[in-house]
Length: 349
Image (spheres, rainbow, N blue to C red):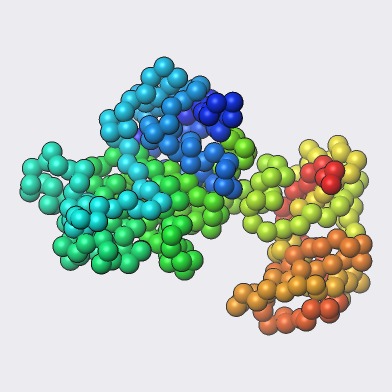
């Protein structure tokens, strides 16, 4: 296991800055994720750690050892860093067992075979060592790619959008399985993805990236309930912004009544605010005098996600149990039940 440290890492292509001053520490045995939209710099940062891209500024260190700086770059093969690629990159002419053993060529035959058998069992593919990659499903190929990366016992494992080629159900199940495998191996790992559900399922801590910078490094719970800025609030989860006015440091006035925060709000110094409301903050209540029109609905089995329009024209989301079945165009009573009050200066839009 290893500790990964990035200090003020920058990477540029010509005049374009792709990674802009990223610093982070990933402690030994932790599983973390870089999460963000396409083009935010997350994959480039991963490649900098792996040694596939040079640094313009900063340092990459593992256990205090410098792997990269602007004037030095340890070759990728000497970093003891494993990588699982988006397209798996398995060798089609090699068997499953030979793929897993690829990084163990210098070991004695008995040790190599023992490690292969151990990993086949770990990833749940015992007995498939003589198969070829094309004979396996996408989920099985992903597990083989993971086993191959784990075989040399790297100090750090990097995963680049590892589930993007899989269907949604398999992606969710496999992400949880991979987390358990990494836990059993005691592996320090860093995942890159644009899918927050993957990030939530796998990572202990998550860095949300935008424009080459980490906007917030935190737990999934805090990213959802305590976003550091408006970008994180928009990118994580679902929600809508309701105009508000600060009455004092802990009370906001909105079209749906007064909201009280348990903690003083830094944003309360602003005259005009937008308060973030998640779908579970807007509750159906037929006794409420406040009415909202249903403009859209999305059935999700146990729940229905409603889009509601207030008389002011502001739209909110509300997640209700599916037995509360309302039609589009229906006006329902609503009230707020907000446990985590998050407000930002009103948007200029």
